[in-house]
Amino acid sequence: MHLPFANLQVKHWNPGASAPLILPVHVICNTSDDDLHANIRANAARPRQMMRRWVKSEAPHTGIAVLVGSGPSLAESLGEIRQHQDAGHTIFAMNGAARFLHDHGVTAAYQVMIDPREETKQLVGPAHDHLIASQCHPAVFEALPHAKLYHLQIEGIDDDLPEYPHPFALVGGAASVGNTSTVLAYVLGYRTMHIYGYDSSHRDAQSHAFHQKMNDGEPNCLVTWNGRDYRTSLTMKLQAEKFQETGRLLEGAGCAIHVHGSGLLPDMWNTPPDVLPEREKYQRMWAIPGYRQFAPGQEAAATFLEVVKPDDLVLDFGSGTGRGALAISKAGVDVFMVDFASNCRDNAALHLPFLDHDLSEPCALRAPYGYCTDVMEHIPPDQVETVIRNIMTSAGTVFFQIATVPDAFGAVINQRLHLTVQPHAWWADLFIRLGFAVTWQADQGHQSQFVIKRV
Image 1 (cartoon, one colour):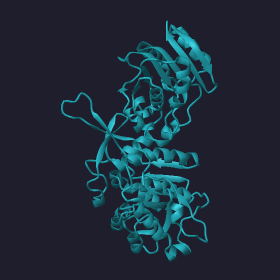
Image 2 (spheres, helix red, strand yellow):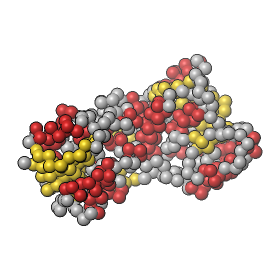
Image 3 (spheres, one colour):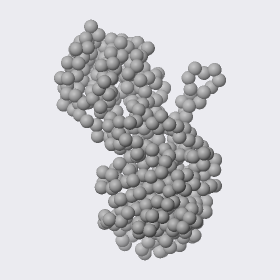
Image 4 (cartoon, one colour):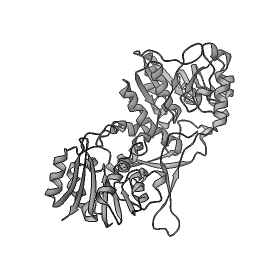
């Protein structure tokens, strides 16, 4: 089973190379599809679960959920977690965090697990109840015969389920037990969540607040956030990125989410808007699957080819996924992509020439034609004129497509994406004021298109 697309890239330097080799990495589940679905079928048919022990959707209530992961910061959060316990709040402990909490005087209301591997049974720990995903290995349920089960919303699960005489919920979230637990708490009616130990990064080479042997040997990578490097596993990186999307969606559904502690995930969540450097902002955005679902450059390519009729090299400024460049290339025109977030490209576009470059700086590339779609609205207002001049210095005739409305997706990571939102006439006047000729234009209401030439 493929986990959500993380667009992870690993850089490898060959001896004597002038640039790194970029290797795309796709994170997959640690269990085969056949074994995963076999677990679901075996556990879903257990007599006890057939009778009553399934998670179902509950009405919203005022209870407070305290979700506890196993990150290194958990050890320094024990005092706050005890205060939550004393206040009667409901504590959900992920995996081995249940035993760690119990050893430190806190017994979780629920232990939550989703890992399908048989060795997950070694993580079973003390709790008042256990919420175990149906994809977990049957050995876990043999150790927990009274566990309460829930189904993850994964592809093909409907074929694994028998007919039930009562309602049950399909729980989303994916990517990790921590992300899934936020959705699970929502399903159970909680709308206020306090989150601890969701570090998603190492501290002093330790990935957990305690040694968890199952995680020994996991491949690691470095992730940069707000100028700081974090060492993390590939799955933790995926969790941190996916949490930003899941958490914002839960906020939109009426939840108040408070992320405590330190590490990659809490630092990403708690970074205020407009603090994150622009390059890092888009590196994070391109890691979110939903952001790459629509490619404006692909949609506008036909208009560019029809109106401009390029017959020589095209520079695609702010190329994004590369689907626009691919459409131009398939029309028989050479194209060179330029963007400052190298993880923006789809795998299908990785073979096209690419320059990692910030358009606020002069670009050494030169070509007769340029293509710039849905870029200018993302530029900070004080850099707009500089970026236009840099683009027009590199290409003599440039097709611009510019959104004229606010963005709707940046809230996923608590960031604003469209920084310069102006009407069609404003952009037309700006191009002319900067000394360029507007040879064609189209005002489409939500976006504007121009062909701009050097005079």
